[in-house]
Length: 505
Image (tube, rainbow, N blue to C red; front, side, top):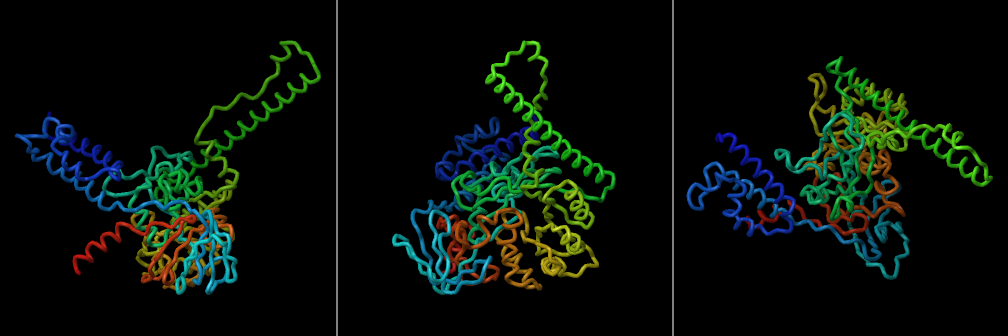
């Protein structure tokens, strides 16, 4: 066996071992792991684990040390504990309540029970068994919504085993991203501490990447965290830089939608035929009609179409009951995607929208909303002003286009969402519109406005308590509630802050 082959096998075994540890480390102590290094070495690195006695080989030792160091760091950062379900009514009194969907309520009261808001206003009757929490001098806002995220499917960019974003193939509408979510992700607590309480986790890759899911950032499992599955179908509109490839991709996409419609039409026809046949048979039995076996054999019905999970997943999007989010940035991409989606009878949402201000009239006329990604970015063309990306939200606002602000999809940067919206406010977008762009608007665009995005009776008790406006850089998020649960405010950033602050004391 050559040294390079042996080295590759060592890397593979260490990667598998690290993956196993990363999945189980919350219930392990790092000390038994470290003490078991001599025992692990022969398993991970057979033939290379020892050169003499208990000494690891020069090649294996650094790799094994790196893997164990990663485990140790991960264990140190683990401190977030999902909150227990709400056990009784809670009343927050004396705070300033920013409903977003209505006027600001000064010195207001917010009462919630079983994860839902049951009363909100100034003169509110508080249940006798409610736990009263005074919040005088503080502000209550709806939890922020990150409408484009990889939360739960992205951990460390340089470690492929921690990424579960892209599936094989170009057409994967049946991919349900929520089942791949890792509820142990350290990014969850960091985003939550910044006021981001809901993410729309989105798969990537291919022409049709799959279906996004709305996640509440508190829970023990992906089932517990899933606020709503199948929020939107994700389409990555092809780049027009290569004309031939572009036309071929659009043609493939169109054909896939046509095939999906044909599939559902055939299934409906088959179901209808079988239903009529059953009704006729029941009537015949009721009337005691007698038919010969040859007559029965002569009746034909449409044969059942083979089951296709990809086409089955397309049903709510073909009917227009759920939105189709199309990732497009350039002018031609946006124009072609918008026209194509309307011709297909879909409910399109443009995601990205870097050049959306250049076609804002068309988007406004077609009533197509935009999810702006990455406000904090530089222009891509040398002749564009430096602040064109910062001013994109206000340009769409002035044009009457409905929009939301999402920022980068990276889970590691989800905590920057307030600053993305804050930058838009600094460059002309009214502050309240900037707040709507990360609360009410994404909820409306993606059909989540019956649960989140505002503070109203009957909606989820998902909100933040702050000492100022959440889009201001200096504002502190004092406490968050997610579906009535008082969430743990600890996270890896706060741990490191406390650690090194003590060093300076």
